[in-house]
Length: 340
Image (cartoon, rainbow, N blue to C red):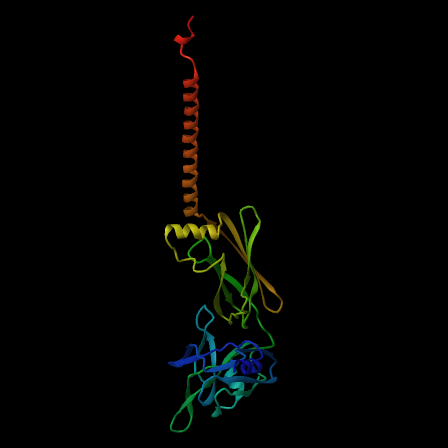
């Protein structure tokens, strides 16, 4: 079965599954139905059309009767989670998508393709337009037969850029460290909040580099390696980890902190710089901050060990000198024995 899935999907697939709740959909993992691709990212001109297919696979032992529905989405929060509204009577991208509403049946371990098309109106506003194309296992209908909801929703996202007078504008709203810029050890989480003030989505890329107090580069992390988008008029938070391991906020016992500080040894003031680009013309964004790492658990243990060594040397030298003096005194003739 895995070989069939691999041949059908042509690579790794990501399932985006969503469940309806009060007219909105939130992320919820589902393994019964796999979709490829997880999203479509197109650029079309007003009046232009494009066709494609949604590939799905029924990974259950029972047949499924499926229906489709489209809905607009916006940014729910700074995590990049989309928020959908199935109650909205959209005149935007969801209404530009032509797809069979169903029902159609997919048998156990069967693959199926659902064709669809997007036709951009001539008067479409340039910029970003966003929708979800969802497939559900059940449909509830009003007495008139109008479909009002679909349960167990899952499916790909449609991200569309309409050409024309497009404004690409973004900036780094905040560049910081989770838990503060002073710490005793790594790893730590660096975060960047990107504010998109334009009318089209952007996918910022770049690097975050770390240099020590002597100006030498000690680390470099790839920014937004998954290619996450920042929707228009929204803020998205991106995170990277500096140092080996994870969960920098979780503190252990004294000696576990000593081991962690030794394993991820860092000391002094570090300069962290974000050098990012976005948009079709690679517009740049930069930000810099300073971080102080002071591994006091490790330094305290080293100080105590050094103190023990120093005290041991002092007493050892004193004992050695005393032994030499005693030896010299025991071998020296007495004053009475030297008289003649």
